[in-house]
Image (cartoon, rainbow, N blue to C red):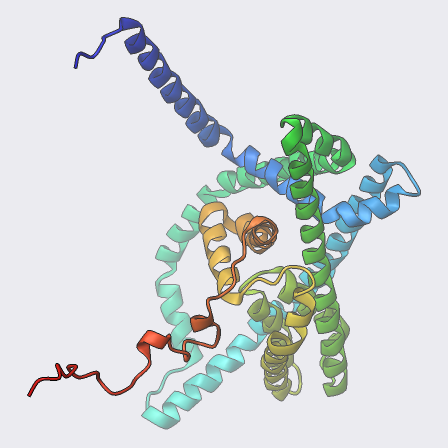
Length: 376
C-alpha cells in the first residue's frame, strides 16, 4: 500500500505545532508577569460571590452600586474597629509580658540554683549581652538596611488592596450583567448549565460564609459567658476575638484564637485563669467538632476536616496567606459543583452491608467428591 505524501499537510501540521507552542509561551508569560494581578481579580470575584446575599437584599431598596458600597464600607469599618481594639490589646499584653520577663528570669535562675547548684544572676546575663554588643550592632545594621525594601513591600500591599477593592466593587455591582455576559460566550444549549454553575457557586459561597458567621457567633457568645464568669480581664473583647479568629482563619485559627486569652489570663493577678481558659478552649473545640459544626456546615457545604487541612496546606504553598484563607471556600464550591453533576450509583448487594454477605458461589459447604460411575 502506498501512502500519498502531500506537502501541504506538512506545512499545516507545522503551523499548528507553532501555534500551540506560541500560545503556551504567551500563557506562561502572562501567568508569570501578571499572576499576582490575576489572583487578585480571582479573589475579588470570589469575595463578590460571598457578598452577593447581602448585596441582593439591599439592592431591592437602593441601586445595586450603592448597595455594594454600603456592604463594602460596613466590612471595612468592622475590620478597622476589630484590628484597632485587638491590636491595642495585643500590644498591652506584649508590653506586660516584656515587663514580667526580669521576674520570670530571676525565678528560673533561682530554680536552676536550687535544683542543679548553678549560680547565675541576671547581672551576669546582662554582662554577656554587653560583651556581644558588637555582633548585636552588626545585626541591627543589617536590619536597618532592609527598611527600604520593607517600605516598598508596604507600598505594594497598599496598591494591591486598592486594586482589589476597585475590582470587588465592579464585580459585585455589575454581577448580574457579568453573569449574563458569561452565559453569552457559550452556545444556547450550554447557557442554562453555565447559569446553573454560576448560581450554585454564589449560593454555596454565601452559605459557607453564613455558616462561618453563625459558628463565630455561637463561639463568641459561649466564650463570653465563660470568660465573664471566671472574671477574665477584657472578657467581652477576648470572646469576640476567639469567635471570629477561630472560624475565619483555617487550620490554625483555633490555636491563634485561644492563645491571646490564655496569655491575658496567665499575666493577670490570678495566673490560674490561663489554665482555665486553655481547658475551655480544648473542651469547646471538641464539642463544636462533634455536635455544633456538623449540623450547621451540613446545611451549607460539609467539607471533611482532612480535605480542609490539605486544601489549606496546598493553598498556602501556592498563594501564601490569601491562598490559605480562600482554600476551604474554594474547595467547598468545587465539591458543590461535583455533587451537582456527578453520577451516583447504587452499591452492589455484596457491599451494601459491609461485605459480610457472600455470593452463592462463595458460600462454604462440603467439598463435592467424584461422582460414582455405577460400576463395581
